Length: 410
Image (cartoon, rainbow, N blue to C red):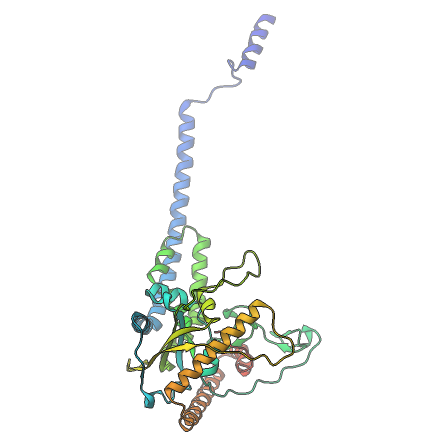
């Protein structure tokens, strides 16, 4: 008996003897098959739900295509062709003075790029994302007068302000925004966190932002989205475009009369060195900023959007000098670069004005017409806002009242 127990104990230790009944071999095969079937079913259900969500997003995209795409695609195709035309060869001076009378005051579209970025529509759209209002727009265009901002309530804490307002560092109750979706329809959130209408001339990048979700690349990325989280990002992107960019894009296409284009040529001495970075992970200074802060040649073109007629074309030197009036000169390299870019761009704008012909009487009449048109549009927008539900109108009243006080966001 003892010998039998010793043999059994040795077999258990060495693995030659098993405890309990052994499982049949096919049990493990059935178990693997069941697990595989469950995984396939879960994957099919997940893919089906993902396809349904993608189909819903595509339906929203088709609605945007219906509202905006039929007009936006020809518009971008036309401006891309004009950009390529101006970049193709050194432009011959051309000016249609009578047709240029209201270019500086009428609603228009503005685009400024390095000449090297005008090589293809894709390169143009990529560079257009960095095209902002600059010294040229400040010194060339004359915007319509807007209503004075409504007085803001003084405060010590946020609880002293009405709902939706915040007590800022200026001890004033202000309605702040952090993204475009925080603003009412047709308004943008600028860098000072205030809702304001897009400033004229309209920046071309507003049109490209609206077009982005209609591009084949966006469709391909949506179809390749592997999971629900990624698809949800596409849906949020589309909702943002439909609520913010589409209304602005429609307004841009319906009101803009002229397209003003500037192509900055590379300086004769080569590209200046990039400015030092603020932080080690900061992006390098782009080419357009590097060109604008040194003297250079620029190609300028103006087209009539309705007729497609070329109204002005020339190659002009952008070279200005900023005179410091204070006792202490600016030493920060980034501030000095910004001042230099402003001076060169403003010098370019003044020279364009001279070559177009400065007719003070015509400009005064054009400004009066622009102010009257802006006042009529403001009255129409106010009347339309009063017909909307109270909840929506309360959100849009304050941002529209102080639209002129907020800095330009583009």
